[in-house]
Image (cartoon, rainbow, N blue to C red; front, side):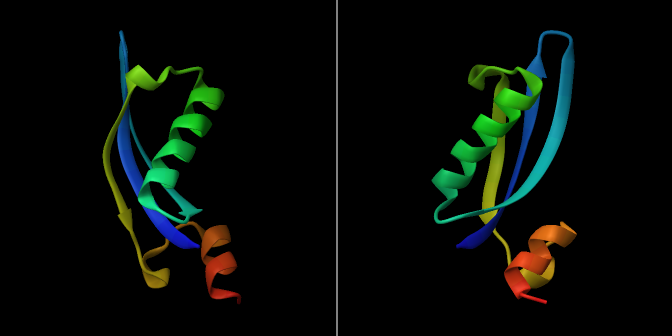
Length: 75
């Protein structure tokens, strides 16, 4: 499993909120699908209101989430 950083924006009629998510996935397409599912279920946002700006693989040193970093490095 690789670590991906997905950045995007939630565009609702009166609200525009940027987001950054780090997560484990096999491919960037899987990471994007997971972001759609998680943000849609937590914030009740439809996929058409979520705009993905980038989905890039990051190294273990660049991970900011402490739980994910511990999972990947095994420390």
